[in-house]
Amino acid sequence: MSTGDTFEEGAAGLSARERVFAQVGGTGEGRRSLVAVLLALAAFGMVLSTSAWQVTAESTAVPMLRAAIASLTDIDAFIAEHGAELREEAARTEGSLEPAGYALPVVLEAQEVRTATDGDLRAMLLDRSAALVYAEGLGAFDRTGDQRIDRLSLVGLLELGAGQLSGPLHTRAGVAAATLAVATALLGALLASLSEGWSRMRAPAAAMALGGVGAAAVSFAFWAAAGQVGGSDPFVADLRTIAQAGFAAGTRNGAFVAGAGLAAVVASWVLEYAERRTFAGEETGDADGFRAGYADEERDAG
Image (tube, rainbow, N blue to C red; front, side):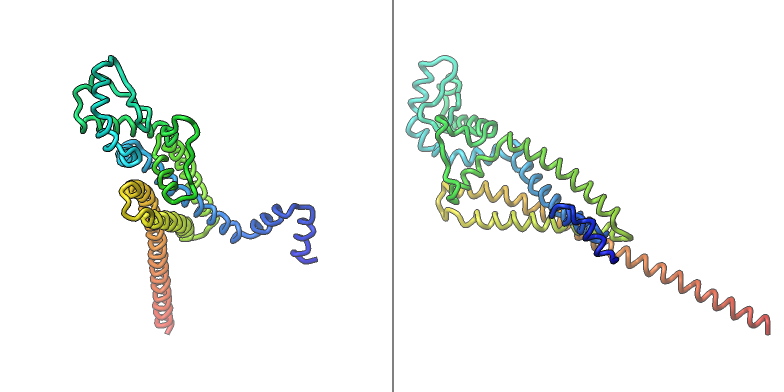
């Protein structure tokens, strides 16, 4: 009875999925390939989640949100129309007030509004608006709960993307990045243990480089697509700038991981070549020494 017949009889009682994994795991090469694919996917996810975590950090996100909110709310037109009314209302009000007709439910102190110039009002509104959207996300614009965004339109996707610059997403992206970083490290160690010689260095590095290339390629594709939206429309231009900044982070981080992985692959080849040359030189020296010793013995015998 052949080995193949034995495997088929043993696998007869297994489900289709179990038979596939049994066949993949039947050889060392199959196990290495599976782990390498999982490592590339983990590195891919780690790059993208790390990029999202970086872009949604408060120090990065809030300035971009200010620019987006200025376009989304048409704040300059709002202040030109309602600035004087706000100051008059502040003169009659003690404590705080909420600007009527403004797109976001922000609260201003009446005392600071009374003497504020239009530029001061603009800065106050944008500061509070950016803080609110960062804390609550795009839902901060929805006062009624009935807001709907056309996610099938490119402009709608840009607007939705700008609303993702939030603290909650920053937290989720950080958890995902940390989890995938641990998974990447464990899979890299597992792949190294399944490899031999300099492949212990080369195989994990190549898999991570592949994941980095994939993340950079996907991010660049979205960056290029965002650049084609909206033409010269100033409203869309601000949203486009924010979206492209986020995608650029993914491209940059993916390129860094890919470059580091490729550098490790090249280093492993160089070190392996140097090791072989060293061993070859030692073997040649040993052989020459043996021949010289043998020749001396023959002369002595003669």
